[in-house]
Image 1 (tube, rainbow, N blue to C red):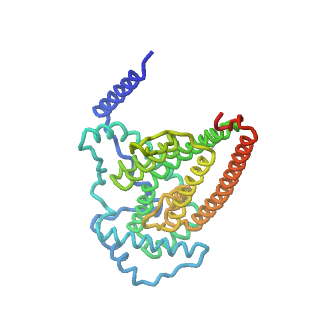
Image 2 (image 1 turned 90 degrees about the vertical axis):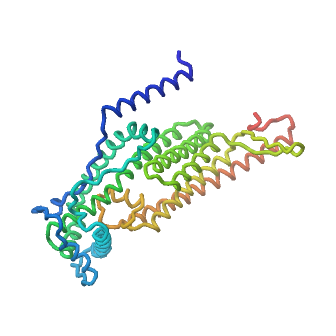
Image 3 (image 1 turned 180 degrees about the horizontal axis):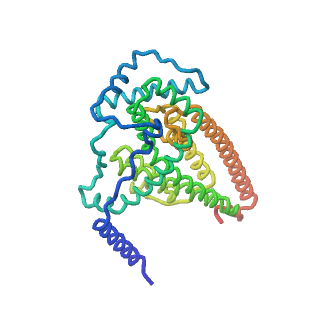
Length: 382
């Protein structure tokens, strides 16, 4: 039988060998970057030669042109979508005039300057690209389905009437949707991960005995915060952002406290600081659950209020992934999501208040019973 130390050593040796073999034999290939083809927008598409500035001039001058749209149920959404595409295209043409006709694909700048970065690059990049490719295939299918809807037909007519029925306009629309869909690939993967985690947590809680409910709820809470810390660490590593790393540290600290709750006491005589572990009672577990969901609700409400198609938040991207619509801002759907989250928060608050009051009543009855019978022990002392 392997001891715990030998098992850890064996795992480290195996992981190192796998990373070395991957570094020598495997060269990770980035997934496809064109999720929407110009031929989907214009069937008779023929690519223009690089250097053509006709579309750039039209985009620049379109701010001084009156916009006339055919009245449809999607007119208001089309106006917002066209303005977003026009602003995005104007910024792109100013920074990179020939961005629609790149000579070569932009390389992905992976950080691998230290041995730790090289180790993680070879170990995790290939699986990451594989998952992103699967997410890209899913998004391609969703976008193709959206292209068959009346909403997209109305927008497409308005778009080409504004930008012209030519190849560059089709390439611009395809590039806009592709860029937005590429932003959504990590959202698809993380959403699938969290859906699986929440489903497992729900099954874990439902199958628990009544006496184990709060203990299992505590396990779900600290596991959720650990997973959130892991997600933030992965994002901080990929994006090289210190603010996300700070969030990961805070989430990990919350998870550790929920798993190993402690109290700090200072002795009056010696002034020594003593750290003692303890157990969370039912009221504290319920409070932790309420606070955790409240923070989640605050995050969702913040996304719904600060969202924009120019800089979409994860909630907007997730809704776009499901519908395949990366041209319209799903503000109505986000309002519905915010209302559902608020309604669930109300029910969670009522549940937490009832559990707290019930627990206070039980403790009061136990204290009264101990006064009548000093030899009786409370259920916590037992």
